[in-house]
Length: 325
Image (cartoon, rainbow, N blue to C red; front, side):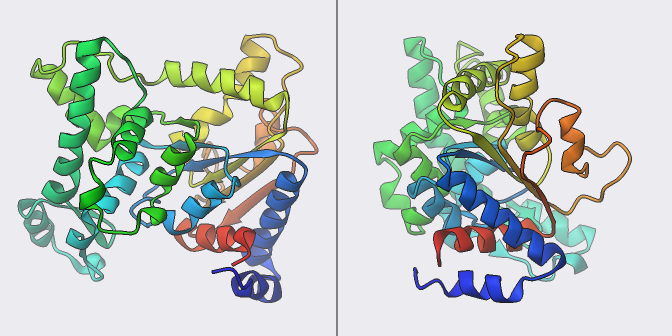
């Protein structure tokens, strides 16, 4: 897919309002990369279950994404889809479901995300078994890894290859693993695999509670990455949705500046957020980008964009634009 039809459609039809905001954000993203800049992409919501990997994986392969911050749910749900896609159950009439019908989905071990139900056994338990092997092996060796590093290890080992139900080129996590892409996964503990890890620790199956590294250690790693990367390139921030996936990593700049006293640390060099959060009093996800100037995250001249729309529609279009599709 490289004939530029989507790009030309967007340029011709997207002229005003949120449509124009998408084009301006894409143009500045492109300029940022052309100027030698790097880009962080943050994934909130259920972008992996929305199969954003169909476009994001190619963005990673083409070096248009250089680091990712995502929720634990997005980290694992890309792999769930990779091995269990054919077992997912679609519920297009989800708005009409009664509580009793919702309970029926639970009894069938189907966990609903809007119109899509993730099958527990085929997706969650299958990946739990694969990752548990790695957790136990690391635990016995006294080795400690981040959540994404364990999944990288599983994917690159080939042990799941025979179980793939989609083209692995459509998995953004596989693309990231192959690139050894830097990643932070704040709040991993509230994800399904995080809950499973806690359960295994409670059962005594894992001796070391800290075999999986999280939280503050991710911030320390991110600070090290940002200092080195920003010394060579301007670092942009492309935020899909709100929440901890974006809130956590954007703070690395004021932390370095205010708490470590590194007054020469560069601000983020580009900012865009795709959000349907209403701008309101106290809503950080709905705050306009200029508010981030007061927190030492963005500067006066930083290109700033907000696309107030559905990320499952906007992000693939914007990525397709950048990819020349």
